[in-house]
Length: 384
Ligand SMILES: NC(=O)c1ccc[n+]([C@@H]2O[C@H](COP(=O)([O-])OP(=O)(O)OC[C@H]3O[C@@H](n4cnc5c(N)ncnc54)[C@H](O)[C@@H]3O)[C@@H](O)[C@H]2O)c1
Ligand SMILES: [Fe+2]
Image (cartoon, rainbow, N blue to C red; front, side, top):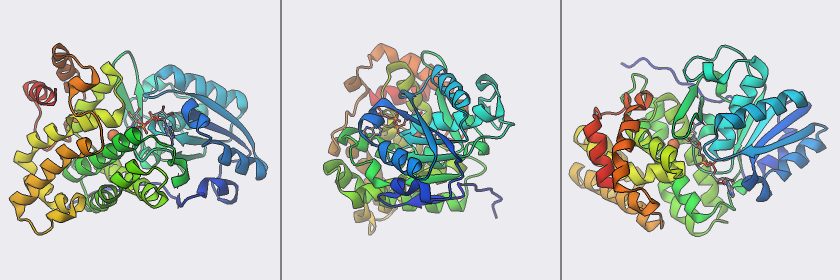
Protein backbone atom coordinates (compact mmCIF):
# COMPACT_ATOMS: atom_id res chain seq x y z
CA UNK A 1 0.00 0.00 0.00
CA UNK A 2 1.52 3.34 -1.01
CA UNK A 3 2.02 6.29 1.32
CA UNK A 4 1.49 9.61 -0.37
CA UNK A 5 0.50 13.24 0.07
CA UNK A 6 -1.83 15.19 -2.20
CA UNK A 7 -2.34 18.96 -2.03
CA UNK A 8 -4.34 21.33 -4.17
CA UNK A 9 -6.04 24.72 -4.02
CA UNK A 10 -8.79 25.30 -1.43
CA UNK A 11 -11.25 26.78 -3.94
CA UNK A 12 -12.04 26.33 -7.64
CA UNK A 13 -14.60 28.61 -9.28
CA UNK A 14 -15.60 27.31 -12.71
CA UNK A 15 -17.94 28.37 -15.48
CA UNK A 16 -18.16 30.90 -18.32
CA UNK A 17 -18.48 34.42 -16.91
CA UNK A 18 -17.05 33.56 -13.45
CA UNK A 19 -14.45 36.32 -13.77
CA UNK A 20 -17.21 38.95 -13.92
CA UNK A 21 -18.49 37.81 -10.53
CA UNK A 22 -15.13 38.25 -8.82
CA UNK A 23 -16.37 40.83 -6.33
CA UNK A 24 -19.15 38.48 -5.12
CA UNK A 25 -16.71 35.65 -4.48
CA UNK A 26 -14.96 35.25 -1.16
CA UNK A 27 -11.44 35.57 -2.55
CA UNK A 28 -9.84 37.41 0.38
CA UNK A 29 -7.92 39.71 -1.98
CA UNK A 30 -8.65 42.79 0.14
CA UNK A 31 -9.10 46.39 -0.91
CA UNK A 32 -5.97 47.07 -3.02
CA UNK A 33 -5.57 44.47 -5.73
CA UNK A 34 -2.65 44.30 -8.17
CA UNK A 35 -3.54 42.49 -11.37
CA UNK A 36 -0.59 40.72 -13.07
CA UNK A 37 -0.90 40.08 -16.81
CA UNK A 38 0.77 40.64 -20.18
CA UNK A 39 0.14 43.03 -23.08
CA UNK A 40 -1.41 40.39 -25.34
CA UNK A 41 -3.95 39.35 -22.72
CA UNK A 42 -4.81 42.98 -21.92
CA UNK A 43 -5.16 43.87 -25.63
CA UNK A 44 -7.52 40.89 -26.01
CA UNK A 45 -9.78 42.65 -23.46
CA UNK A 46 -9.52 39.82 -20.95
CA UNK A 47 -8.60 41.86 -17.89
CA UNK A 48 -11.40 44.43 -18.17
CA UNK A 49 -14.28 42.29 -16.77
CA UNK A 50 -12.22 41.47 -13.68
CA UNK A 51 -11.26 45.12 -13.14
CA UNK A 52 -14.89 46.21 -13.55
CA UNK A 53 -16.12 43.64 -11.05
CA UNK A 54 -13.44 44.48 -8.49
CA UNK A 55 -14.18 48.23 -8.78
CA UNK A 56 -17.89 47.55 -8.40
CA UNK A 57 -17.04 45.74 -5.18
CA UNK A 58 -15.20 48.86 -3.95
CA UNK A 59 -11.60 47.67 -4.41
CA UNK A 60 -8.78 49.86 -5.74
CA UNK A 61 -6.97 48.14 -8.61
CA UNK A 62 -3.69 48.60 -10.41
CA UNK A 63 -2.43 46.57 -13.33
CA UNK A 64 1.06 45.34 -14.14
CA UNK A 65 1.27 44.35 -17.82
CA UNK A 66 5.00 43.76 -18.04
CA UNK A 67 4.94 39.94 -18.14
CA UNK A 68 6.56 38.36 -21.19
CA UNK A 69 6.51 34.69 -22.23
CA UNK A 70 9.02 32.58 -20.31
CA UNK A 71 9.44 35.42 -17.81
CA UNK A 72 12.97 36.51 -16.88
CA UNK A 73 13.91 37.49 -13.31
CA UNK A 74 13.83 41.23 -14.14
CA UNK A 75 10.07 41.05 -14.79
CA UNK A 76 9.49 39.57 -11.35
CA UNK A 77 11.62 42.21 -9.66
CA UNK A 78 9.70 45.00 -11.46
CA UNK A 79 6.33 43.52 -10.54
CA UNK A 80 7.31 43.03 -6.89
CA UNK A 81 8.44 46.68 -6.72
CA UNK A 82 5.06 47.72 -8.16
CA UNK A 83 3.15 45.61 -5.63
CA UNK A 84 5.05 47.14 -2.72
CA UNK A 85 4.72 50.70 -4.06
CA UNK A 86 0.97 50.21 -4.59
CA UNK A 87 0.52 48.69 -1.12
CA UNK A 88 -1.18 45.63 -2.61
CA UNK A 89 -3.38 43.61 -0.25
CA UNK A 90 -3.87 40.85 -2.83
CA UNK A 91 -2.63 39.64 -6.21
CA UNK A 92 -4.81 38.53 -9.13
CA UNK A 93 -3.02 36.77 -12.00
CA UNK A 94 -4.83 36.69 -15.35
CA UNK A 95 -3.08 35.12 -18.32
CA UNK A 96 -1.17 32.10 -19.51
CA UNK A 97 1.33 30.18 -17.43
CA UNK A 98 3.81 33.06 -17.69
CA UNK A 99 1.48 35.60 -16.02
CA UNK A 100 0.30 33.12 -13.40
CA UNK A 101 3.86 32.10 -12.51
CA UNK A 102 4.85 35.76 -12.08
CA UNK A 103 1.73 36.46 -10.00
CA UNK A 104 2.64 33.62 -7.62
CA UNK A 105 6.15 34.95 -7.03
CA UNK A 106 4.92 38.54 -6.63
CA UNK A 107 2.40 37.46 -3.98
CA UNK A 108 5.22 35.72 -2.13
CA UNK A 109 8.11 38.17 -2.50
CA UNK A 110 6.06 41.34 -1.89
CA UNK A 111 5.04 39.94 1.48
CA UNK A 112 7.91 37.74 2.66
CA UNK A 113 10.81 39.90 1.49
CA UNK A 114 12.77 36.79 0.49
CA UNK A 115 15.30 37.05 -2.36
CA UNK A 116 14.31 35.23 -5.55
CA UNK A 117 17.84 33.80 -5.93
CA UNK A 118 17.50 32.05 -2.54
CA UNK A 119 14.31 30.14 -3.29
CA UNK A 120 15.01 28.21 -6.51
CA UNK A 121 14.53 24.50 -5.98
CA UNK A 122 12.11 22.47 -3.91
CA UNK A 123 10.91 23.62 -0.49
CA UNK A 124 13.22 26.64 -0.09
CA UNK A 125 10.42 29.18 0.60
CA UNK A 126 10.12 30.13 4.28
CA UNK A 127 7.88 33.22 4.35
CA UNK A 128 4.18 33.86 3.79
CA UNK A 129 2.49 35.37 0.75
CA UNK A 130 -0.27 37.85 0.01
CA UNK A 131 -3.75 36.51 -0.87
CA UNK A 132 -3.59 35.15 -4.43
CA UNK A 133 -6.20 34.29 -7.09
CA UNK A 134 -5.29 32.91 -10.53
CA UNK A 135 -7.38 32.87 -13.71
CA UNK A 136 -5.81 31.04 -16.69
CA UNK A 137 -6.38 32.30 -20.25
CA UNK A 138 -4.72 29.23 -21.81
CA UNK A 139 -5.61 25.58 -21.21
CA UNK A 140 -2.63 24.97 -20.53
CA UNK A 141 -0.02 24.80 -17.97
CA UNK A 142 -2.32 24.11 -15.01
CA UNK A 143 -0.23 26.71 -13.16
CA UNK A 144 -3.43 27.84 -11.36
CA UNK A 145 -3.25 24.62 -9.29
CA UNK A 146 0.48 23.90 -9.12
CA UNK A 147 2.96 24.92 -6.38
CA UNK A 148 5.48 25.83 -9.11
CA UNK A 149 6.80 28.98 -10.79
CA UNK A 150 9.17 28.75 -13.74
CA UNK A 151 11.63 31.60 -14.29
CA UNK A 152 14.18 32.19 -17.06
CA UNK A 153 17.37 32.90 -15.16
CA UNK A 154 19.79 33.76 -17.97
CA UNK A 155 19.91 33.58 -21.74
CA UNK A 156 18.99 29.89 -21.87
CA UNK A 157 18.26 28.49 -18.40
CA UNK A 158 14.90 27.93 -16.78
CA UNK A 159 14.62 27.28 -13.07
CA UNK A 160 11.68 26.41 -10.87
CA UNK A 161 10.55 27.59 -7.45
CA UNK A 162 8.54 24.78 -5.89
CA UNK A 163 6.69 25.35 -2.61
CA UNK A 164 3.17 24.70 -1.29
CA UNK A 165 3.06 28.43 -0.45
CA UNK A 166 2.71 29.10 -4.20
CA UNK A 167 -0.64 27.30 -4.42
CA UNK A 168 -3.20 30.12 -4.75
CA UNK A 169 -6.26 30.67 -2.55
CA UNK A 170 -8.54 30.21 -5.54
CA UNK A 171 -8.43 29.25 -9.23
CA UNK A 172 -10.99 30.69 -11.64
CA UNK A 173 -11.77 28.60 -14.74
CA UNK A 174 -13.72 30.84 -17.10
CA UNK A 175 -13.92 29.70 -20.75
CA UNK A 176 -14.73 33.26 -21.87
CA UNK A 177 -11.06 34.08 -21.14
CA UNK A 178 -9.85 31.51 -23.68
CA UNK A 179 -12.14 32.12 -26.69
CA UNK A 180 -9.67 34.46 -28.42
CA UNK A 181 -6.73 32.10 -28.12
CA UNK A 182 -5.33 31.52 -31.65
CA UNK A 183 -5.67 27.92 -32.99
CA UNK A 184 -1.93 27.19 -32.86
CA UNK A 185 -1.69 28.32 -29.20
CA UNK A 186 -4.84 26.34 -28.32
CA UNK A 187 -3.26 23.26 -29.90
CA UNK A 188 0.19 23.61 -28.34
CA UNK A 189 -1.02 24.50 -24.85
CA UNK A 190 -3.57 21.65 -25.02
CA UNK A 191 -0.79 19.18 -25.85
CA UNK A 192 1.23 20.59 -22.92
CA UNK A 193 -1.72 19.71 -20.66
CA UNK A 194 -1.85 16.18 -22.14
CA UNK A 195 1.86 15.78 -21.43
CA UNK A 196 1.27 16.81 -17.80
CA UNK A 197 -1.32 14.05 -17.45
CA UNK A 198 0.79 11.37 -19.20
CA UNK A 199 3.97 12.20 -17.30
CA UNK A 200 2.09 12.39 -13.95
CA UNK A 201 0.55 8.96 -14.62
CA UNK A 202 3.92 7.32 -15.32
CA UNK A 203 6.08 9.44 -12.98
CA UNK A 204 8.83 7.54 -11.17
CA UNK A 205 8.40 9.93 -8.24
CA UNK A 206 7.93 8.23 -4.86
CA UNK A 207 4.79 10.35 -4.58
CA UNK A 208 3.12 8.97 -7.73
CA UNK A 209 -0.29 8.34 -6.22
CA UNK A 210 -3.76 7.02 -7.08
CA UNK A 211 -5.41 10.47 -6.85
CA UNK A 212 -3.04 11.90 -9.48
CA UNK A 213 -3.46 8.85 -11.71
CA UNK A 214 -7.27 9.11 -11.53
CA UNK A 215 -7.17 12.83 -12.32
CA UNK A 216 -4.71 12.22 -15.17
CA UNK A 217 -7.07 9.78 -16.87
CA UNK A 218 -10.05 12.12 -16.62
CA UNK A 219 -7.86 14.99 -17.85
CA UNK A 220 -6.89 12.97 -20.94
CA UNK A 221 -10.54 12.10 -21.61
CA UNK A 222 -11.54 15.77 -21.54
CA UNK A 223 -8.52 17.03 -23.48
CA UNK A 224 -8.67 14.26 -26.09
CA UNK A 225 -12.39 14.72 -26.71
CA UNK A 226 -12.24 18.51 -27.02
CA UNK A 227 -8.91 19.64 -28.42
CA UNK A 228 -9.89 19.44 -32.09
CA UNK A 229 -13.18 21.27 -31.53
CA UNK A 230 -11.42 24.02 -29.55
CA UNK A 231 -8.73 24.41 -32.25
CA UNK A 232 -11.22 24.40 -35.16
CA UNK A 233 -13.80 26.68 -33.55
CA UNK A 234 -12.35 28.90 -30.85
CA UNK A 235 -15.78 30.13 -29.78
CA UNK A 236 -17.05 26.64 -28.88
CA UNK A 237 -17.63 27.40 -25.19
CA UNK A 238 -18.39 23.79 -24.26
CA UNK A 239 -15.08 22.62 -25.72
CA UNK A 240 -13.23 25.60 -24.22
CA UNK A 241 -14.60 25.00 -20.72
CA UNK A 242 -13.80 21.27 -21.00
CA UNK A 243 -10.23 22.09 -22.05
CA UNK A 244 -9.82 24.38 -19.02
CA UNK A 245 -11.13 21.66 -16.73
CA UNK A 246 -8.88 19.04 -18.34
CA UNK A 247 -5.80 21.26 -18.07
CA UNK A 248 -6.62 21.98 -14.42
CA UNK A 249 -7.05 18.28 -13.58
CA UNK A 250 -3.75 17.51 -15.32
CA UNK A 251 -2.20 20.33 -13.27
CA UNK A 252 -3.51 18.80 -10.03
CA UNK A 253 -2.14 15.44 -11.13
CA UNK A 254 1.41 16.60 -11.87
CA UNK A 255 1.52 19.04 -8.96
CA UNK A 256 1.61 15.88 -6.81
CA UNK A 257 3.23 13.37 -9.16
CA UNK A 258 5.77 15.44 -11.07
CA UNK A 259 6.60 15.52 -14.77
CA UNK A 260 9.69 14.00 -16.32
CA UNK A 261 11.76 13.66 -19.53
CA UNK A 262 9.35 15.29 -22.00
CA UNK A 263 9.57 18.48 -19.96
CA UNK A 264 13.32 18.04 -19.31
CA UNK A 265 13.94 17.87 -23.07
CA UNK A 266 11.42 20.61 -23.88
CA UNK A 267 12.88 23.26 -21.58
CA UNK A 268 16.20 23.67 -23.46
CA UNK A 269 14.25 24.11 -26.74
CA UNK A 270 12.35 26.99 -25.13
CA UNK A 271 15.43 28.37 -23.43
CA UNK A 272 17.79 28.31 -26.45
CA UNK A 273 15.38 28.85 -29.34
CA UNK A 274 12.41 30.63 -27.72
CA UNK A 275 9.96 28.01 -28.95
CA UNK A 276 6.76 28.30 -26.84
CA UNK A 277 6.49 25.83 -23.95
CA UNK A 278 3.58 23.78 -25.33
CA UNK A 279 5.13 23.46 -28.79
CA UNK A 280 8.52 22.46 -27.30
CA UNK A 281 6.74 19.62 -25.49
CA UNK A 282 4.79 18.60 -28.57
CA UNK A 283 7.99 18.38 -30.68
CA UNK A 284 9.73 15.87 -28.39
CA UNK A 285 6.67 14.02 -27.04
CA UNK A 286 6.39 11.14 -29.58
CA UNK A 287 10.11 10.41 -29.35
CA UNK A 288 10.25 10.37 -25.53
CA UNK A 289 7.14 8.16 -25.45
CA UNK A 290 8.82 5.76 -27.88
CA UNK A 291 11.94 5.72 -25.64
CA UNK A 292 9.89 5.13 -22.47
CA UNK A 293 7.56 2.53 -24.00
CA UNK A 294 9.99 -0.29 -23.27
CA UNK A 295 9.41 0.22 -19.53
CA UNK A 296 5.92 1.69 -19.34
CA UNK A 297 4.03 0.03 -22.16
CA UNK A 298 1.37 -1.21 -19.73
CA UNK A 299 0.68 2.30 -18.47
CA UNK A 300 0.48 3.73 -22.00
CA UNK A 301 -1.87 0.91 -23.01
CA UNK A 302 -4.05 1.80 -20.00
CA UNK A 303 -4.13 5.49 -20.98
CA UNK A 304 -4.74 4.83 -24.69
CA UNK A 305 -8.58 4.60 -24.63
CA UNK A 306 -8.82 7.78 -22.49
CA UNK A 307 -7.33 9.78 -25.35
CA UNK A 308 -8.53 7.60 -28.22
CA UNK A 309 -11.81 5.83 -27.25
CA UNK A 310 -11.74 3.81 -30.48
CA UNK A 311 -8.84 1.83 -28.94
CA UNK A 312 -11.08 0.49 -26.12
CA UNK A 313 -11.61 -2.97 -27.72
CA UNK A 314 -7.95 -3.41 -28.71
CA UNK A 315 -5.55 -5.69 -26.80
CA UNK A 316 -2.47 -4.38 -24.98
CA UNK A 317 -0.21 -4.23 -28.01
CA UNK A 318 -2.93 -2.67 -30.18
CA UNK A 319 -3.60 -0.03 -27.53
CA UNK A 320 0.08 0.73 -27.08
CA UNK A 321 0.69 1.04 -30.82
CA UNK A 322 -2.45 3.19 -31.21
CA UNK A 323 -1.38 5.46 -28.34
CA UNK A 324 2.10 6.08 -29.79
CA UNK A 325 0.79 6.54 -33.31
CA UNK A 326 -2.17 8.70 -32.26
CA UNK A 327 0.05 11.08 -30.30
CA UNK A 328 2.59 11.26 -33.14
CA UNK A 329 -0.21 12.23 -35.55
CA UNK A 330 -2.01 14.66 -33.24
CA UNK A 331 0.25 17.69 -33.99
CA UNK A 332 -0.16 16.99 -37.72
CA UNK A 333 -3.96 16.95 -37.33
CA UNK A 334 -3.74 20.21 -35.37
CA UNK A 335 -1.47 21.91 -37.92
CA UNK A 336 1.52 22.28 -35.61
CA UNK A 337 5.13 21.98 -36.77
CA UNK A 338 6.30 18.42 -36.11
CA UNK A 339 10.09 18.45 -36.50
CA UNK A 340 12.76 20.44 -34.68
CA UNK A 341 14.06 21.62 -38.06
CA UNK A 342 10.61 23.11 -38.79
CA UNK A 343 11.07 25.59 -35.92
CA UNK A 344 14.53 26.73 -37.04
CA UNK A 345 16.72 24.46 -34.91
CA UNK A 346 19.95 23.57 -36.79
CA UNK A 347 21.23 19.99 -36.67
CA UNK A 348 24.50 21.14 -35.10
CA UNK A 349 22.50 22.63 -32.23
CA UNK A 350 21.31 19.23 -31.01
CA UNK A 351 24.39 18.40 -28.92
CA UNK A 352 23.98 21.52 -26.78
CA UNK A 353 20.27 20.81 -26.34
CA UNK A 354 21.16 17.34 -25.03
CA UNK A 355 23.77 18.75 -22.63
CA UNK A 356 21.29 21.28 -21.28
CA UNK A 357 18.56 18.67 -20.91
CA UNK A 358 20.85 16.64 -18.65
CA UNK A 359 20.92 19.64 -16.26
CA UNK A 360 17.16 19.24 -15.66
CA UNK A 361 17.85 16.70 -12.92
CA UNK A 362 14.74 17.83 -10.95
CA UNK A 363 12.63 16.41 -13.82
CA UNK A 364 14.82 13.58 -15.14
CA UNK A 365 14.70 11.75 -11.80
CA UNK A 366 10.95 11.31 -12.37
CA UNK A 367 11.35 9.60 -15.72
CA UNK A 368 10.36 5.93 -15.71
CA UNK A 369 13.46 5.06 -17.79
CA UNK A 370 16.91 6.47 -17.02
CA UNK A 371 17.94 9.05 -19.62
CA UNK A 372 21.67 9.21 -20.40
CA UNK A 373 23.30 12.00 -22.42
CA UNK A 374 23.49 9.63 -25.42
CA UNK A 375 19.73 8.89 -25.06
CA UNK A 376 18.87 12.60 -24.98
CA UNK A 377 21.03 13.17 -28.06
CA UNK A 378 19.30 10.32 -29.93
CA UNK A 379 15.82 11.56 -28.97
CA UNK A 380 16.65 15.05 -30.31
CA UNK A 381 18.04 13.50 -33.50
CA UNK A 382 14.84 11.48 -33.94
CA UNK A 383 12.83 14.66 -33.38
CA UNK A 384 14.94 16.70 -35.83
N1 LIG B 1 3.76 26.76 -13.02
C1 LIG B 1 3.63 25.64 -13.66
O1 LIG B 1 3.23 24.65 -13.08
C2 LIG B 1 3.97 25.59 -15.10
C3 LIG B 1 3.75 24.41 -15.82
C4 LIG B 1 4.06 24.39 -17.17
C5 LIG B 1 4.59 25.52 -17.78
N2 LIG B 1 4.81 26.66 -17.06
C6 LIG B 1 5.34 27.89 -17.67
O2 LIG B 1 4.26 28.59 -18.26
C7 LIG B 1 4.75 29.38 -19.36
C8 LIG B 1 3.94 29.07 -20.61
O3 LIG B 1 2.61 29.45 -20.41
P1 LIG B 1 1.51 29.38 -21.58
O4 LIG B 1 1.84 28.29 -22.50
O5 LIG B 1 0.18 29.36 -20.92
O6 LIG B 1 1.69 30.73 -22.39
P2 LIG B 1 2.15 32.23 -21.99
O7 LIG B 1 1.60 32.67 -20.70
O8 LIG B 1 3.63 32.30 -22.14
O9 LIG B 1 1.45 33.09 -23.14
C9 LIG B 1 1.82 32.91 -24.51
C10 LIG B 1 1.20 33.99 -25.37
O10 LIG B 1 -0.21 33.80 -25.48
C11 LIG B 1 -0.90 35.00 -25.26
N3 LIG B 1 -2.22 34.68 -24.70
C12 LIG B 1 -2.46 34.01 -23.55
N4 LIG B 1 -3.79 33.83 -23.40
C13 LIG B 1 -4.40 34.42 -24.45
C14 LIG B 1 -5.76 34.56 -24.87
N5 LIG B 1 -6.76 34.00 -24.17
N6 LIG B 1 -6.02 35.22 -26.01
C15 LIG B 1 -5.02 35.73 -26.75
N7 LIG B 1 -3.70 35.61 -26.44
C16 LIG B 1 -3.40 34.97 -25.29
C17 LIG B 1 -0.01 35.79 -24.33
O11 LIG B 1 -0.24 37.17 -24.45
C18 LIG B 1 1.38 35.39 -24.81
O12 LIG B 1 1.78 36.23 -25.87
C19 LIG B 1 6.21 29.01 -19.52
O13 LIG B 1 7.03 29.98 -18.87
C20 LIG B 1 6.31 27.67 -18.80
O14 LIG B 1 7.63 27.41 -18.34
C21 LIG B 1 4.48 26.70 -15.75
FE1 LIG C 1 4.22 21.92 -19.24
